[in-house]
Amino acid sequence: MSSDCCDWERVLCNSTTGHVIELLLHDMKQQYYYNGFYWTTGTIHEKHNWLLNVSLFQPFKELTSLDLSSNKIGGCIAHEGFERLAVLRRLEVLNLANNYFEDSIFPSLSQLSSLTTLVLVGNDRLGNWTTAAGSKSLSRLDNLETLDISWTNFSKSAISSLSTAVKSSSLRNLNLAGLWMEGPLPAQELSAFENLERLDLSDNWLTEYGLTPKEFHGLSKLSKLKHKLEFIPESNF
Image 1: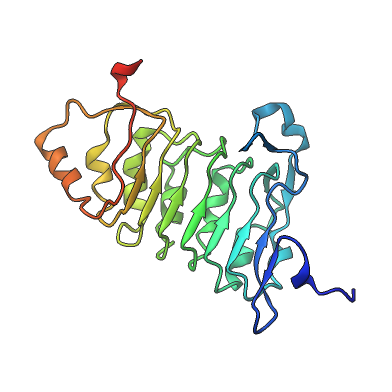
Image 2: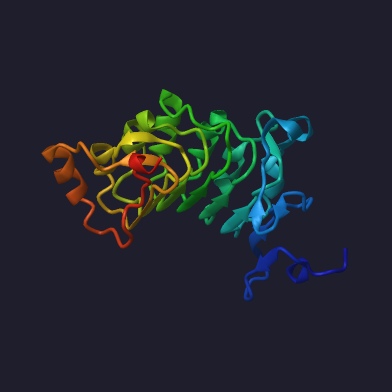
């Protein structure tokens, strides 16, 4: 009780106020990190998943970044979901990568209007983004600049829903890598994100062939991209 939490590992405090501003609680049991990569190996460990009580983080009023990645979290305790973090007005970064969250978390995430970065990579139970609840939830994240949904079950057919859900004016970075999308590049849908600066489509089976003039025109709207669109042409397989 006499120790200063600001001296602890995984805790970063404001040097002036002494309040906690970052919690780096990734891989707390040190089970996932192996050879430079994090592992979430599907159903073999699912019986060991646990439910998170998000209310535990409410006392950290100045929290700006919360990393809960790679912790085998299977969801939240009833009525103790991410909506509990709405009182944290400064929370900008939420990293939930490599857990077992499902689409049911989106309504609670919609309460976090201050978020600028949302990382959901590796949650292979996510993917039913065509649901009205998911779209409506994302549309409330007015300040979202970075969205990482790589290596989930998100499908190409749902990109249209994504483009209407997320505020295209705020989004700068979009990671759609490793979704195993096949066929033509979804150019028309991606053109909705006119302010994108970075777009990752790597580890997909997309091809640029067959684009209509309308679709080419749509891609030309992505004039702020600082990194090229990456894809694996189908002819390579």
